[in-house]
Length: 112
Image 1 (cartoon, rainbow, N blue to C red):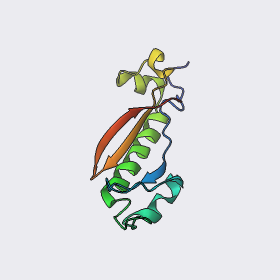
Image 2: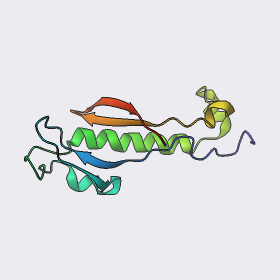
Image 3: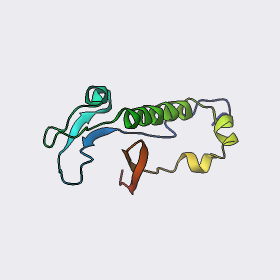
Image 4: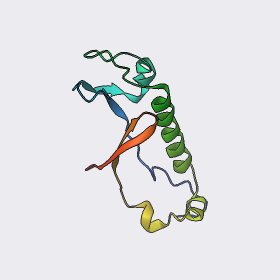
């Protein structure tokens, strides 16, 4: 690959679904897309009434998408300056991040 060529899709971020943070509530909706998240900021849980998506958790999700876009827009030389080499570009790492109270609450390995 040419060192000035853009290296697309170094990072693949798929964001969908919301779950209620209330430990006593089992509401979740995996059909909600990232593009719909702004409709759920400060919205009450349909089952228990607790806020489903805080402003901070929404901001963190938007920041994660922005960082992914930046990495996927970089050239090979730029990626290598971050220690991402041709060997690591091909590796696929998948993690499920769950934001709660403005912080990453849990990270789970996910199969692609």
